Image (tube, rainbow, N blue to C red; front, side, top):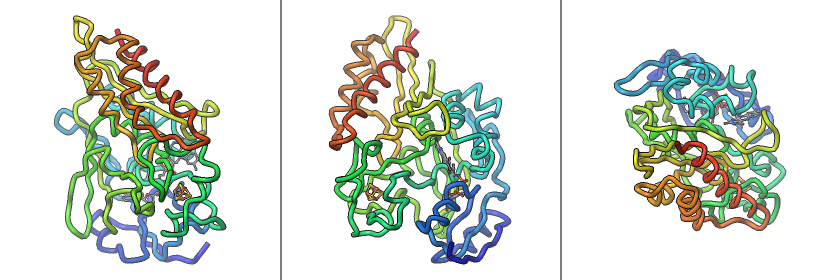
Amino acid sequence: MRPFEYARAGDPADAVARFRPGAMYLGGGTNLVDLMRLGVAEPEFLVDVSRLPLDRIEPDGDGLRVGAAVRNSDLGAHPLVRERYPMLARAVLAGASGQIRNMATVGGNLLQRTRCPYFQDVSKPCNKREPGSGCPAIGGDHSNLAILGHSPACVATHPSDMAVALAALDARVHVTGPGGDRVIPMPGLHRLPGDEAGRDTVLAPGELVTAVHLPAPPAGASRYRKVRERASFAFALVSIAAALDVAGDGTVRDCRIALGAVAHMPWRCERAERALRGAPASEESFTRAAEAELEQARPLPRNAHKVPLARNLIVRTLLELAP
Ligand SMILES: Cc1cc2nc3c(=O)[nH]c(=O)nc-3n(C[C@H](O)[C@H](O)[C@H](O)COP(=O)(O)OP(=O)(O)OC[C@H]3O[C@@H](n4cnc5c(N)ncnc54)[C@H](O)[C@@H]3O)c2cc1C
Ligand code: SF4
């Protein structure tokens, strides 16, 4: 690992003031330190933001404010999160292991890097690591990479479970940086790769995530489900965060659907949601909505299985949520 300087910031303004070219913020380190060991990340200076006074979960209007330094295990176990946002609690607890969740922070979870095998292997080219070097995943192992929104530059997926629930909950990410404070609506924090595979998010250099605001929970029933190769300690093949509100006459009043592990960002299923509002809450409508969404899918030769997987996950989850 390349030598680096280290400083612990006292507050968000101090963290931003210390940031400089070659620096990176350090949360729990569960992703960044791994990437440093692999030589994928080589910061000259780490600004530790894991102990900033941003470690509280508190009511905020109709919703909840979650500090960026809150540990994943504290978020998943918090009584207000479990009671009002069960989809989020389940998503967080579906990620990683107990030990990693004890270290990992909300800010770091949102900004963790892709698990594309070529990105993590510095002996291979990768546009995300080295712009212009190529994307070996397209002709190689892409069995768990993107089916939606990818580009010739990059077909990676974003691995965060938490981000999928936040996208379905219409969460807002609070950020501070050299240019001041701003609020980014989810799923808008992450971006599609386009021809800039190296940029995972819309954050500018030095911008620090300070908090996530959750608005009032969606009406109706909600759920997070994750399909993976084994029951724990595995990233998603496809995941879903969904909420369904059905009126007394059996029609869908409102719904939220976001998919994980299918794109470079959490994928909010706007087409499916539009197709469902006002439709009968039936298997036929759920199937039509899923198909309307997945018409846009462009699977690669070795990940076409993710399309029926996503379709079935949408339909089965909505059926479980329907009264
Ligand atoms: C074996 C293993 C299995 C895993 N399985 C899953 C899984 O199933 N699902 C899942 O979602 N995750 C999984 N993870 C990933 C894990 O959740 C992330 O490593 C963790 O959430 C990252 O949080 P952190 O605080 O440790 O971030 P760090 O590693 O400290 O940082 C990650 C990135 O975020 C940046 N950063 C950190 N905090 C801030 C901030 N406040 N503002 C701006 N930038 C910031 C850092 O500069 C860095 O680029 C797994 C990890 C491992 C090692
Ligand atoms: S999919 Fe993206 S991260 Fe993976 S090798 Fe291609 S450019 Fe790199």
